[in-house]
Image (tube, rainbow, N blue to C red; front, side, top):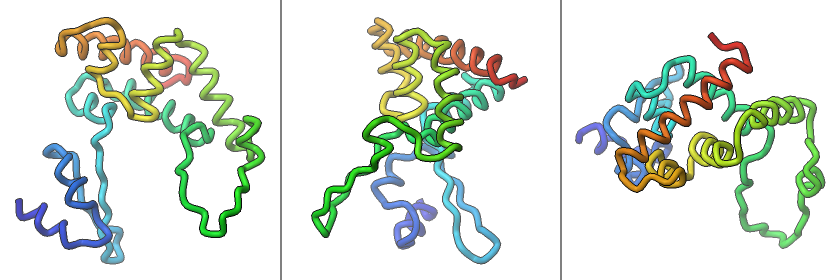
Length: 174
């Protein structure tokens, strides 16, 4: 409790609302060597699966690489903000689906090669669970047709582990 109270007064740290959603062990506080705090929050579904020993290190690495390629390919939704000048100037590359850099092209190619290994439903599950983190394990299991929360989580875990194993084989992670 004292740790949470100390963080509430740090304007550069997480908000009290954000801290209230964390489980024990999801927050690590470190320093950068110059006296500044570094906050590391690991509360994604993938991190929780790894902490609960539902994913092996190889599977976690493969899913992390998939997420990294998705993010660096520019496939995440952009944050919309208020334009104070009221000028609408969309990015010309994003409107037609083109890559803006060579690095983005390489990441998109790696992402697509991994995504090609998946069925339609697996692609939806892994994109929502690992990439955008908009669903949890139970919701993914519900998409698979399981009503019981326990069986839904177990089925989703089995599918995600299978996907991670295919990604590890594709990228030669051992």
